[in-house]
Length: 98
Image (tube, rainbow, N blue to C red):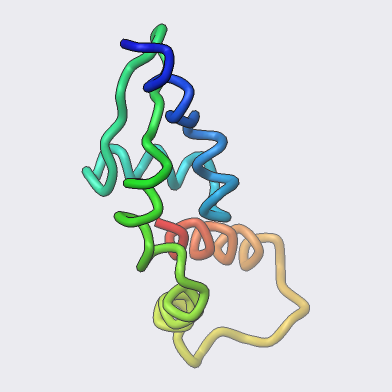
């Protein structure tokens, strides 16, 4: 791979930072085929321009809030939460990031 091309690629961690999602969500996106990667020196590297274009709907804040609300439903209690409820809420937030 040419150095100029390598310089334009970003790591999965950098992609997570750009999109405001977890690294796990980026890896799930790779597995689901939302975005493709290239292997450079054994590391998964992404094209930031394609990444933002392909992930645009996923990173949209309003869509994320709607997704969260649909996962939780109107039966979710108000805080304070138990440890189990916090765990469930964390999983739901990660799912919404996917």
